[in-house]
Image (cartoon, rainbow, N blue to C red; front, top):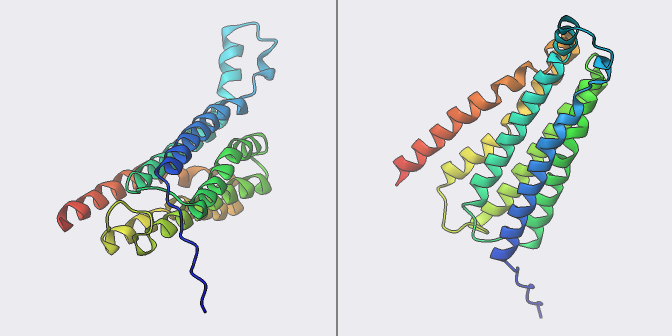
Length: 215
């Protein structure tokens, strides 16, 4: 005789809790990015000119901070958008999401490394790999949730689900491009990430249009 499979427990409260946890981790990670700024070099400032010169040296750090902050903001928006379509979470989804959040929490460290050693390819490589892993697990959790509409409130058009899945690879793709750019021109390693908010806005509008048209 075949043993009956243990029923999967889908809990709305689990989804609520993982959303609360993600809000806390994203907010903390975005705040911790500020620790990358180094003001030890401006301790002995004696004039406005020296202060402005010292602050101008922080501009590369500001650039990395802004791109990473926007990157985290987009990841958070995507997480919020997808979980809004879900009716609950099970243990497998919870673990996939927790692993995703673990690497979100690691991004301030990767950001600090890329800031402190911006001329070293290894630092940029680790930063990019961090971004890729977040995207990969974010994709995995979404595919798991949509498999046979497992965790969705209501069935989603396959084309729309696939559109969202493809969108999950935007940041990892840009991270991969950044790795290539950094190998040849390390000063421009952060440039691909400037496209994150632009592509996100365009893709969101396109998915909304497809969703409205499908109704």
